[in-house]
Image (tube, rainbow, N blue to C red; front, side, top):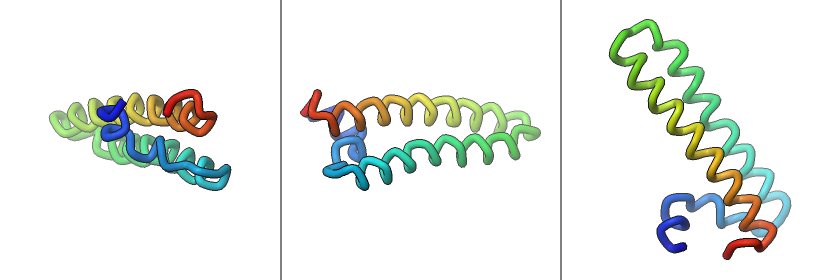
Length: 78
């Protein structure tokens, strides 16, 4: 569990509903911004591919972070 807490530090910080909403917005905005940047630079062949992979990975990371955030807030995991 310590490894998960080190990889997803924001997911275990929400103590109240306001904190939950703030961290949820962070997890939703991050892949959106990275996706927009990747979309703008997609015309450059090598850079577009690398940013596409980074965009995909950040989406997966944020999805797992949201799931952990909700589970930690509901005290399902500690």
